[in-house]
Image (cartoon, rainbow over all chains, first blue to last red; front, side, top):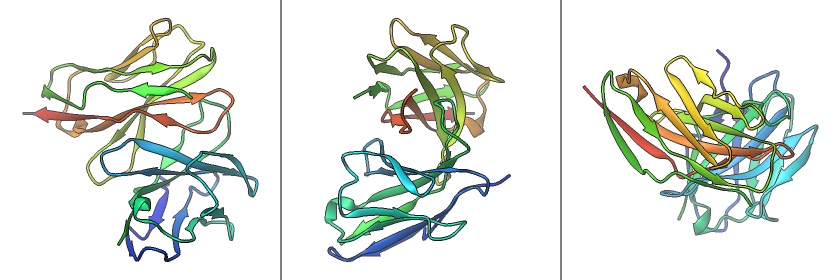
Length: 115
Length: 114
């Protein structure tokens, strides 16, 4: 069964550094998402992406964040200048289509640690 | 903004027994979707069951069923004949009919004992 994959599984970086988190969505999916979960808190929506543009973003997704689909298979989240509070688990998800009933399939997550 | 509340941080059930996980939400919308996701330890979240708000009939998927009370804004998950593999974190989530984001609760950790 196709799965969403994410690399790396764990990323450690210094405050102020740029990081790129990578995701490979399920191949025929058209909608892509990033969520994050700070330790001990709930999973929070960051951004959704469709047809090479952002379709929705949360207040968390400020100017330090960007997303890109650089080729036909990868979907990336870039954090330009990491802060301590960016330490979290970042989940990528993908789905076939819009409509509220559409299932979002999640990847295993990348644990980001900012020192 | 919609709020999803899971009031049970942890629950425990014996194998073969039934357990119910609670979820309430706050919304002013009439059309929306509700989901239960399961996250086993060190594995990705997978969809367990979903409910369209316009449907009066409660969703059922094998041993998993929901009790959807729209007026009370309640969406509980019942797991029947619990199995050891059901042990996981369970997240309730809300999605607006007009949006893309899943809005999650904080989760309930389910322990299944032999």
